[in-house]
Length: 276
Image 1: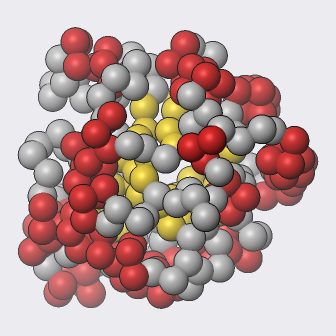
Image 2: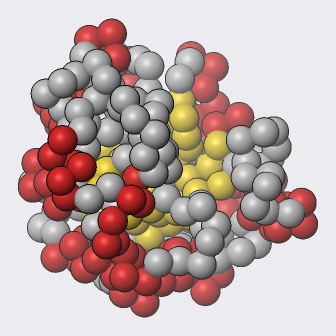
């Protein structure tokens, strides 16, 4: 059996859970994850270290966008996690990775983005994430923008599927203060991370028609997720150039046709030898 089972993982994936702030479902929270489970959708989530390398489920490196305060996540203690609540949901706290795994319980596939600020990887934190993923009884895959993180994931949990996230690396949100232009081009072109032997890629939806993701999918036969699908045009691109969408800002029902198309494609598409 392949490490990455296309029939299990290639489904519509709810980005940071099926969140909808207007309905009280904040991204990366228990409520958003439960909504995705109830809709039988896969879940994408973000994991980063709190104090002592404790893996917690949170996207940003500081809490201020969603929680009153200015703390860095890496400084949050267990007491802080008990005390702090989301700004619009005083009954929601930052979940630990262990709590998320317990909540999902293998019912839907999980894509876990390991956050990186492009510093040398935190081995202790990564070891904990990888060990928890390895012992989890359900479909789970680890991914990161930082290929060095995925190289370590291969070392610490070789049996867990792993992937690299990428995209255009154009514009102001692509770590311009941490990555020079030459490295950004290598990352965009999927030229880093060969040592990680990735099972899949997740590529920016607006750059799907460029050569690197098309070559990975069409020539190399590597499964391709795309992020973040938010509009009808994004859905069209995802259906044409990717294997499964990582989506938000839409009802689950909007993806039922794509789920059927994915299932039909899995039945009809020849599998590369490496995936059999």
